[in-house]
Length: 225
Image 1: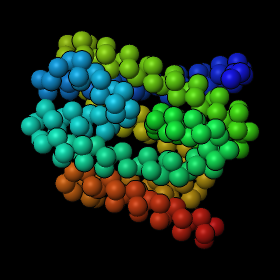
Image 2: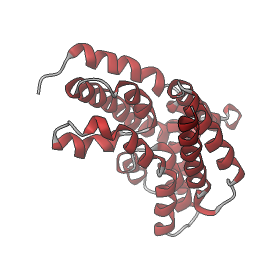
Image 3: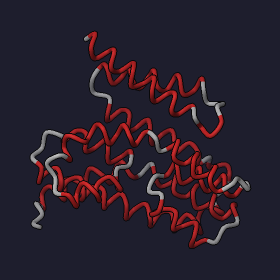
Image 4: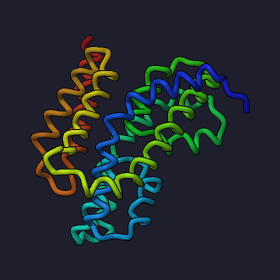
């Protein structure tokens, strides 16, 4: 398979700035692995078994707190439920792709990659595939490296640095990139507001409620427009 080097370079260049806010997030996960008491290699392997920072942190934190494995996995699935909507949004671009791409591609569909690829859904199949995989490979490689580094760096970082602020900053940046139409803004605001109101639901089910309301609000706004 031939690769368009210009597309690959553009994908890498677009991915790098979006990854920077994820570095403190990776350090937090490394610290969570250490605090959980689990084997470091097992903790690091979760970075490629669960390629999604929020779900990975959820599972590690719950297991470290003594939560049953099934309950921890369920909570992780709830956190990653938004990826179902990501898949639905990029599905048209995957319909013309080879079967191997349809199987492999979803694995690297994280928040940052969705934000980038959703802007290129109108590209021809080959260009989209090249851009998607190049950006996805960039995010994947950097994430594995950062989480591994977090195992050693995370525990020595002072609490005063407040690394937990990296998570909302990361998602705010993605919203700024992705919200380019009024219905998307309505969906984002409605989803965020409802998620906040239902944040106390067990197993972070408030995320599902917020996601459903956000989709509904965005759909209504699109039709009214």
